[in-house]
Image (cartoon, helix red, strand yellow):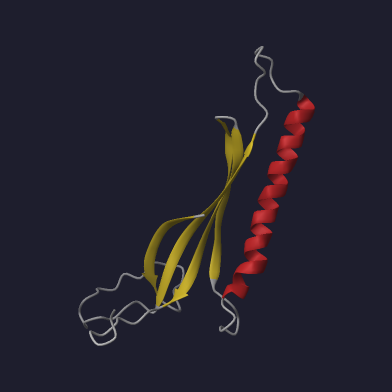
Length: 132
């Protein structure tokens, strides 16, 4: 998993990026910090043999089946588990599932990328007395 970008949003407008001017009122963080994540899963793919023969149809079929299972598993895992990462929130963590795409066989690998935008609570700035 990697962080694609972090941006400010609002409670009502999440997951849209807030376009408010910052710095007008000192240290006023956005009410919601949105984090766009990219979940990547790669597996070995059937490739040509040393003799230059292409993979057998049953190998390609098995690889396609595994990729489809991986796609559903990643999607279900995020949908089912991510809300529980914020038990202090009555309805769980807010998030928006983004696009999921396949990564075509390249370099002997095949896989998927799943984008997801997660709302984090806004944070307050530390005062000089409480900063480390």
